[in-house]
Image (cartoon, rainbow, N blue to C red; front, side, top):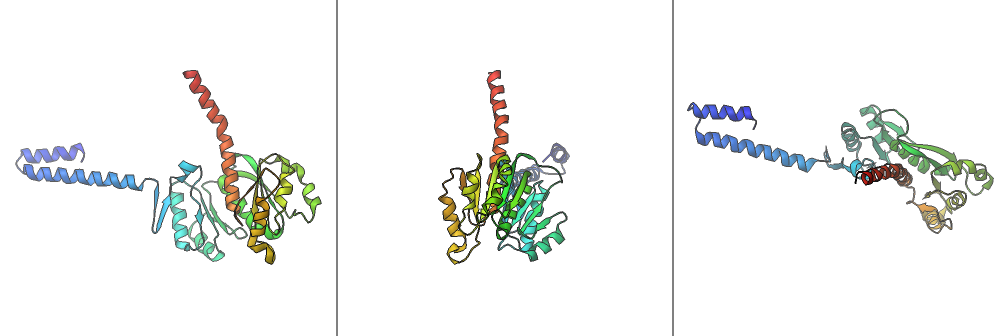
Length: 282
């Protein structure tokens, strides 16, 4: 209750137009309403209002990037409402594993959402502009059958605001193809390598560079490829010490962690400057 309303009640009491008891009841009711509103605000802080979804709007503050929508088994309506809520709160949206049918519904409803049909990814950027995180990521696919996974990584990097390049179809069956790209490999800060079958390519790439190589096994291959498990096990046993491994077909996860690495490196000089400034002040 603001001062003007309280003053009005007191005037009514002084003029005999309102009893003290009635005025007390009105003041009590107003205080309870204000308290309820404050509690509701605290409970909903950082949480989006989407039916059936507890949207984590605080994740960007905690983790550096907004919540990502995993689209399988979600309706187009739920995905669209979630993206709209993020957009209303000043956050870019990324939705993975989106079918063409769902994408058609969502892009018709939300202006500015783009769909990559190879990656099966929807992306809604806030504004057009250049990269916001320094550094370069090189995305490599062993064969054209691995492109969907590589493109999922590319869309994630675009969403994060990271400069990227792509090299396609340089698997180990034609080693000269990779050897011709060594200068580009060494110019990158992080590499993402998607490969199926026996999954040998990340180890070869790792032997050329001094930066992290994030290997992504794909579910490409005949029977004993076991849906990417053979590539996964091969990559986990890589003799190249700089090779890290994501889950099968997880181009998003590889790119997200590449972004986290670059973002952290960007923060280190800023943190050093703050520490030095605090030491000087002390």
